Image (cartoon, rainbow, N blue to C red; front, top):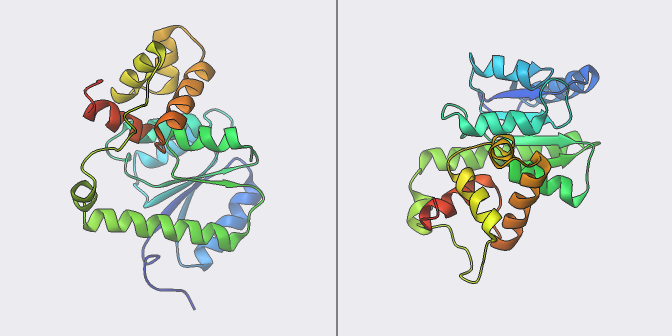
Length: 215
């Protein structure tokens, strides 16, 4: 018997270049009551998103043609999709890998191999949180009107430039092109700023920059 509640009529987009993993995860999620669309890489996922808007995205990180990082940056820059919760699946489990994934814009980072029940629990938790925000879109702003960052935080001149570009909605690769440095360098600056400020992702960095009149 399928559970009722947050899973009712919820559509997920599952993206992975491993057909065996796609089949296993899709079957398990369908069994748990979800509708599941699939794509083999980021570019195929964007084609799906142009026609359909899922309630959540589950995405592999390392994929051909367009990896998970590039896909999430596209998703976060599009007003149609920027709100969608994203769960990263990755074989890379080091701390820096998790930081990179979350700073790119993912909401959850899970390491392969994983337990199917844990995946379902993370999906359900993310959907419940998204549902609360949709039902009470202004509650968060009322309780915490501004991003809270310690007053002692100081950015280097380069970090200041980077966070201004982040606030303007530029992806890490675009910032790297403008500043004539590698994308890895920009990712390092973003990661450093997340560490300094205690913020969780690029979206919060952008809000902080805007609210602090840095952008």
